[in-house]
Image 1 (tube, rainbow, N blue to C red):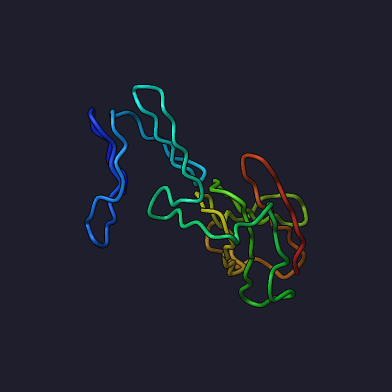
Image 2 (cartoon, rainbow, N blue to C red; image 1 turned 135 degrees about the vertical axis):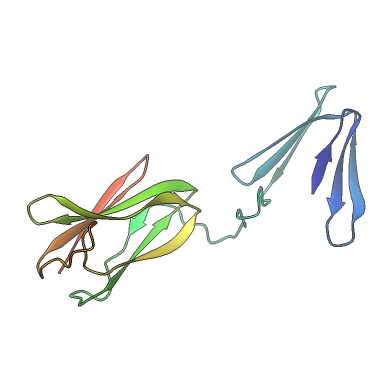
Length: 153
């Protein structure tokens, strides 16, 4: 854990509660993209990479390189199927189900996910809870940067 005061910045080991590093002179702390940046009032700068920057930001070497939308499983399905997707960084993800006429019939998710592999389940129902007929449907993943589509039966 890093703590900044007006006079110094300290690093503590949370398990032992011991101070393990001191950055004299005070300054600022910034976090993001698995990096911690410490800047002093005197202009010194320290950058620590590959560190967890919040509780749900667990760094691993297995962070995906790109966005992927996998084929649903099982396909064909009755009555439920799983849709797996992979994202390379924290993103707001929307997954919609679209009928063959191009109409959105269900939004499975619309929330922020952290980097990694994720699975959502569809039970074959629309947004009103009505069971949809058998047939061909598309599922669409939307983020700020990309839209991906796949077909399912």
